[in-house]
Image (cartoon, rainbow, N blue to C red; front, side, top):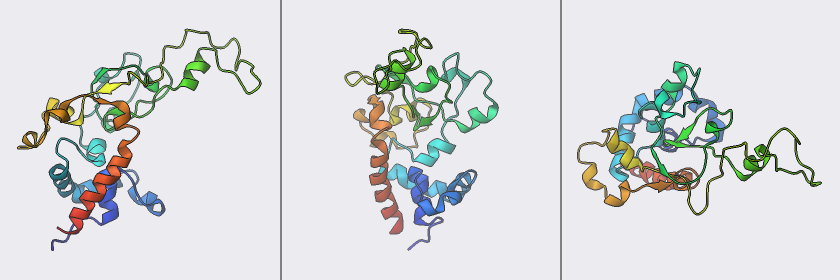
Amino acid sequence: MRTLSLDLAAQRFLFTGEHPRHSLAYFMGDRTAGLWAAGGSECLALWIEEHPGTRPWAWWELKSPRCQSSDLPARVGVGYGDWFFRKTSAPRRRVGGIGTPVYEVLNYFPAFRRGVPDRWVDRCDVELYNGCARDIHGNVIMPGVFKDGAFLGLAPSETDPPMYESEAAYLRRHGLLMPGEEQQITDVDFEPVSYDEIYVPFGERDDDIADDSVGRMEHV
């Protein structure tokens, strides 16, 4: 049996970004890069073997292509320092659907999970910033501050949700598929995916595939 470079908690962290609550400090900041340097290569190799066409959480955080100013709307990113672009992954290409990431219309930094915006305008935002939100007594909240139709953000549509290129398509576009990896991927893996397949439930899927991968590493 081969001795692995990282313990199971560190492996799981690199796969999913999750950590034991009592050890939050251990996994913060530059320690992520240190863990990747210590065992990222073997974790990545196992991940690709089990889940070709995708990458683990730490790869997206540390090794994915970096965001460029051209990846963001013109009004976003003005005045951002080099640190932002060094720390932020290049987003996946959006290919359709209705819904607005908050950073496009409100004062939020862009942030991405696996290349997809991690926060979206919701119904409450639309009502508030269009001057339509009311309190529990039926009174308009902040009357006169916001005007109906002035806010351009839209909540994601249930019938036409925001759609993005798949991880496999992102990797192929950037020339990052490993030798022989594409032959293990089906045409379905290159089809666009809904934002909620990535952003909302994907953490649960991460748990499943991380458990599978960690189990494999325990028995290597």
